[in-house]
Length: 424
Image 1 (cartoon, rainbow, N blue to C red):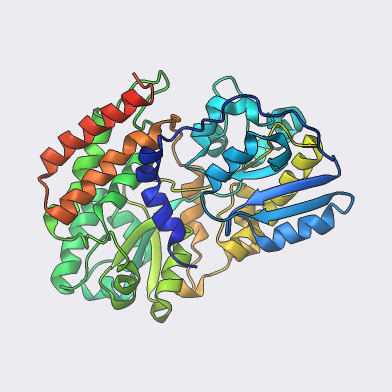
Image 2: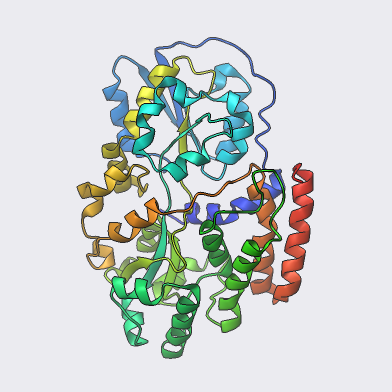
């Protein structure tokens, strides 16, 4: 696995700004008719466990389930399909960064509560379900996966710096962002070529995910200039001013992970696979601790049923089977998809030790974090509006731009984008 998921999520806000970040479904689509015994499922590479999907075909033998792994811009292709009933899938993945933009057009999807989801809702994390729920209570997707975040750190480099090395101690002693940055200063003193973080945008992203407000409130008002965003910005800039920021915003990340230039990484559970694939020679050197400042989430997608589906009841049976706790555990093993059903956290696929992380049972970090991630309203235009903040943080690193001027420019650009998106 390459870094496509990690980089895609980092770049999603920038892409959304350029594209307008609107679902733009438009119209009601052609009515058409479909064969209720022939269903089509669309997802992207790595979006589901291919093994579970293959087994779903066998399990639902009375249905012909045609599956397509769609490459390229999945959202654009899905939107095209939704405009014409005959070309729309009966079941589709929806990426987590896109779900908010589909909520204003929820009528293009089946309300899963009408086909039996109410009985299954208690199985899944409430904060994740809310992301796929409209203001009037319609549920348009069941969650495939999530990205509870943590601190991945090099135990051997921490030992050289005289820092704590046990995950429990690291979690306790580096519990705040300032504690974490202080450790980064000590780390660089002891190992001069090692930096704490890859870029300051990652800190900003984590902090936004730790809050209960983002860039737009539920009244569709821009709040990206308020204290919660300003605090995240100020905190994110600190590693840059302290000289513990590697300023990596390009293709040099793999090398930095392999050669020890990065002593820690803050990221989602699925990022473990990125690290292990990028630096197999560091097996056993890494550990996982809690994220400074509290739980946060990055990524995580959904399965939905377009309103034009030929057999929504059967489509929901297929979705609920694929996303059962047992099959979510298999998805974790096969594709590093962290489960959205907490019952899966007790299954062997997640409770065993991870050899890459020195035999650590990483579920002891990720499981509690997943269940405590705060609920925050994400507006359809949130990704577009947030883009300027990430762009300006990159300008600080790449061009040495004054952080205060970068903040002013980020807010100004965000307000302009918000206005174009119809945000107050």
